[in-house]
Amino acid sequence: MTMKNSSILLIYTGGTIGMMEDVATGALIPFDFGNLIDYVPELRRFKFDIDIVAFETPIDSSDVSLHTWKEIARLIEVNYNHFDGFVVLHGTDTMAYSASALGFMLQGLSKPVIFTGSQLPIGKLRTDGKENLITSIEIAAATRNGEPVVQEVAVYFESQLFRGNRTHKYNTENFDAFESANFSCLAEVGIHITFHYHRMWRSDKKELEVQYGLDNSVGVLKIFPGMNMAIVNGILHAKDLKALVLETFGSGNAPRHKEFTEAIAEAIEKGIVVVNISQCNKGFVEQGRYETSSALLKSGVIGGGDMTTEAAVTKLMYLLGQGHSGIELKNLFATPLRGELTVSSDLLGVD
Ligand code: ASP
Image (cartoon, rainbow, N blue to C red; front, side, top):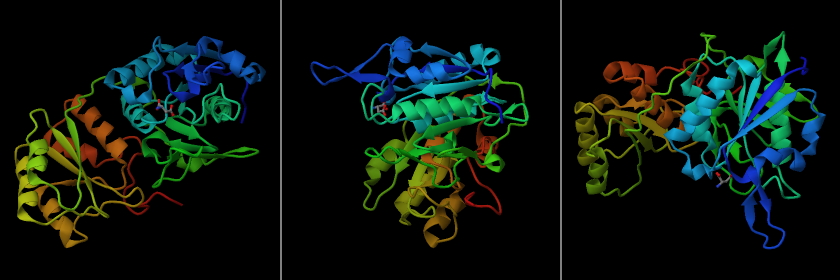
């Protein structure tokens, strides 16, 4: 592995990592990311080139939109041939959605795109941001046999590198904000960076082709005992709805009463694609295992396997945005496109 003469582009979108404490008031305020080197002088010690582009108006990641994803994709596309790797600095709250979305949009990616951020601002003494940033840069620059080690969209946080579309923010307090419950990490960081090469995703295509088409006609319905069917029907009859992520119990189960099962079946008959994602973070949907998921299976709900809600929502936006519909959309949803879904024998993808 060599780490010399690499060039890395940092893309700063916003979030806690780019904040500092106002000494007078103690309030958190954004700092000028162009002056990052003042806060992280360690960056000078890297032997490779680091450039920074920052959003003109940094955003809290709760304000991320399709426009944000397109802007990140555009920055990667226009700089793709000039840099060996990309580090995207992003708020943690919706990082799992953004990393999933970018993974789908960056078709044919063969360079690292590492999302990172922090729980404490980089301008705070105890920040986790410095380590996250420095290690993300090292990972983005890492090569093996002349090739980038990572050739996919990943999330680096608190000593672990995860496939982006497998992540979920599960912790608001500790530094390990993310989990990847159904797919083991791509790298572990201690004294050494230990890459798990056999888990890395490789695209068949090697030419980057950014897919900007995204369609947000997607809904999420998290089911719970005692749901009011008027509210459920309100969602199912929403004018724009083309695809619905049904967040179910356990291994894909839902209430069996007719009003619910018929409402779902009717929606599918009308052409809405309904997919089944478990509310449990670990494990997978297996429709038909219990009586309580048989009706969903019969009516044509698509099992989402071990996909996260974040991956399912963004995959549907991506597939709809590419103009897919009907059976083609259903088949593509059930196919792993960027390693977001485990199929066949290694059902859980955890070894
Ligand atoms: N609210 C912030 C954001 O997601 C939290 C963070 O940066 O971690 O932008």
